[in-house]
Length: 188
Ligand code: URA
Ligand code: SF4
Image (cartoon, rainbow, N blue to C red; front, side, top):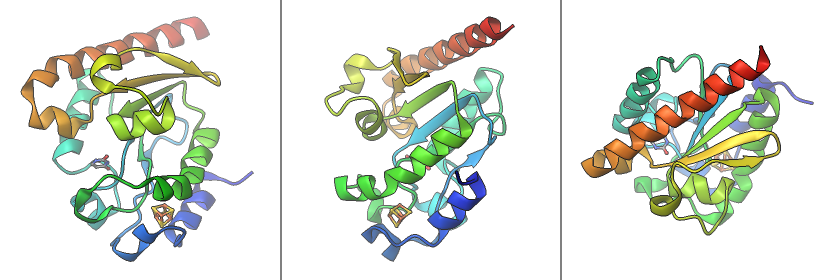
């Protein structure tokens, strides 16, 4: 069993897929190592690549607002991505890249042991929940796998592009909060 810091050190030196060639920094993910809630995006964007921190660009700011909107903070949760290196021009990560990178996320989940995982957007939802999932139809519906409640929702970038999605995004965050509170209540 590795520690989270050890897995991160592996990722920092990783050249397993072609995305290593154009990255500035590996974006491993960050937050509370014992978080109850994990947010998973698809891969770093430009600002994330520069700083090495997940979700700090425009989409990240919306995500931060949504997290704060349910009375939580970024430090309480864990925020990461399917691929740890930026795909050139923000294209979607390719299947071979995701497959090569997924072991890092598996380690993260194993070590952090979240109760809730939120898949942000289609790429993360397809990879984590079901390759046939349609976000438009199935966002906001819970899945339960290996002891973890998993919720697909829109990617915050999609919400920034289409204001009509905003209401549903907020509804999903309220749903996350209710599930979180219910899990806390159960533990008492
Ligand atoms: N979009 C993502 O999917 N992940 C990030 O870290 C930033 C933008
Ligand atoms: Fe390694 Fe993942 Fe980066 Fe590819 S995206 S080089 S698998 S850390």
